[in-house]
Length: 59
Figure 1 (tube, one colour):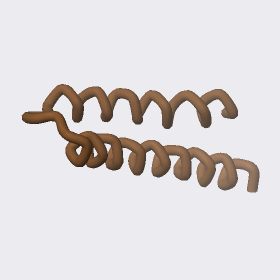
Figure 2 (cartoon, helix red, strand yellow):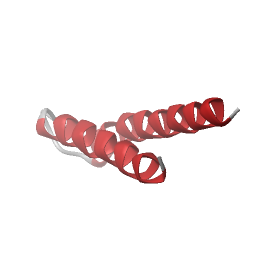
Figure 3 (tube, one colour):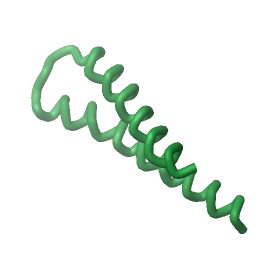
């Protein structure tokens, strides 16, 4: 579970960031920030879900 806790959020972040960066119409700092912000939020959300699941299983 510890490896899943590390690998899955990183995988989600990289896949979402790659898709956002490939679909940018123009490249600027603000557009890069917003393209990186939402994948980061999704990665943290997946990490939190894994932690919640691990806590639920151990309970």
